[in-house]
Image (tube, rainbow, N blue to C red; front, side, top):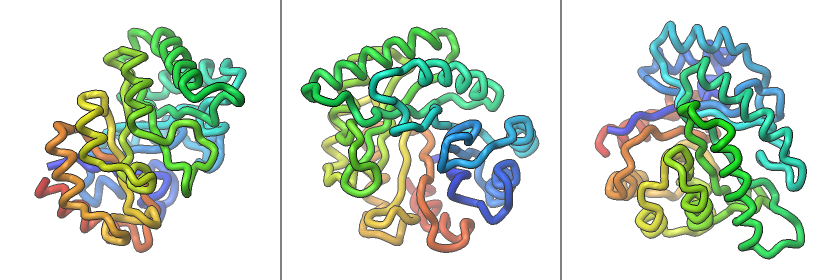
Length: 264
C-alpha cells in the first residue's frame, strides 16, 4: 500500500489556510502531505505561516514529505546568477528541519542559452554538486524534477526522465535523486516501465496527476492500476505526492486513487 500525500496548494483548499488544509487531510485519513514553496512568497503559492503549519503537522501526526526550493523564478534556476538559489536553499533547509521535511524539490530552469544540450546538462551537475556540498550534513535529499514542455512548462531545460537520471548520476550523492512525475512523463509520451527500469534507485520521489488535463486520477486516460503496478515492479516504495488540480471536492477527488493505491 502506497502512502499518498495530497498537495496542500491544490487539495483541501476548502478548509482555508495551509494549516487547516493539513488538518482536513488528516481528518480524511491521510498521514502525509506535500507543498510547494515553504514561504510562498513566489507565485503561484501563497504566504505560509510556518509556526502554524508546524503546529498542525505535530497536532495531527502528519508528515510533510516534500517541499519546493525557492525562488521559483524560471522553475528554480535562473540561467546565470545562481546566488539567490543557493541563499534560499539554506533557508529552505532550515524550514525543512522545522517541519520535518526530508525532501526538497529542485528543477532545471530554462537552461543556459546558446550552449549545446550536453554542456547544459553538465552545468546542472556542477550546480547541484555545489548545492549538495553546501547542505552536507543536513540529512535533506534534493530531488530533481523533469517537467513536460508540451503543455505546462514550455522552455524548461529538463523535460526527459533519462536526462534527469543522467544529472542525478553525475551528482553522485545518496542525497540527490530524481522526482518521477507520472503526469509529466505521460504528457511527454514516455514509456513509464522503460524509464523506471533505466532509472533504478535514482528515483527518490514520485508525484501523479491524470493526463490529459492534470486532474485527479480517473479524469484522464491513464490506467492507474497498471501505472502503480509498474511503479511497484520498479522497486519504488516511498510516498506519492498527489499534485493535481481537482475537478470536484477534494475528499471526493482522492477516492479512486486511494482505492488503487491500497491494492498496489
